[in-house]
Length: 372
Image 1 (spheres, helix red, strand yellow):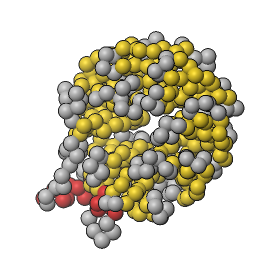
Image 2: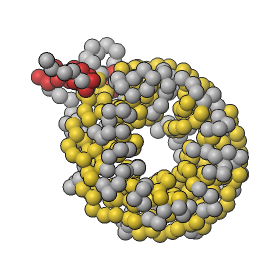
Image 3: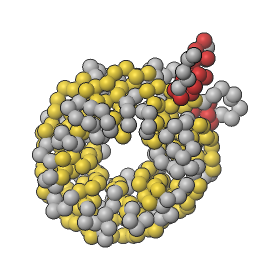
Image 4: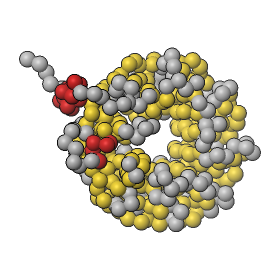
């Protein structure tokens, strides 16, 4: 008797259709960091299958692309490892003094910014030379960060926002927020900093230049993930989190909550893209095992596809032909063909195939092949 796994069942439409001509695929690697294993799972997007695991000195944290290079953080090992995306192996290591709390890459990839604890500090790293360019001590434990072209924003455990200048190599000031914020994002123009506070169900806006607290917005949920539109310099921002089966739509340039909409069961991962002229929002629903797609302009449901399991992060391939939905339990990736799911006249199943990557995935990135 043949045992039917979830992967076998979901991949069946793909296997049945192997006799017909296949659609063109993306050229790139999918790197997935495992929360339980010392390695990065690698899948080939040209054939949608896992090809190898890149061993690391410790459990990975984040996958980063900076200055045409690929790095992976290893928080407990206090290191950043550089990976050769052609040879699929570790080629360098940057040893740091503290435990890595989080990393961000400046627009353009000129610098990797790392915040550490034990000791608490902001580190600016040149990816080309693998050298720590600037080290700025912090007076409080960092919990989240983001980086703009020259500025770094760090939220701390005692409820402050610390701003630092990379070019000047100094801390510019700290803004008391009254509560710790686990989400920090620069507005796409870099002029404001947006923060999500779990304890107060609030979103805060801070002026990036002066550090002035501009607004506090009450939310219907505990903010955990922010995502900006991709076609209008982030004119709309979408927020998911615990507490509601909803998405909060924010106008970040007006510091206003625009609308709260129902978005399936327990909305989680977010991605935006323009597909066939449609401005779309992609939302994973762990509560129902679905990928829900909304038309951003009309705020209406465009499509929904059942991917099964516990879907977490969603990524779009560079050609935006496919959505990759990563299962947080199994590490499987469900591949959704977007032209099929958005065309309701097509009878072909939109779930193209399913393939494994890494156990307990916590960070993923699509890496172009041949990137040096």
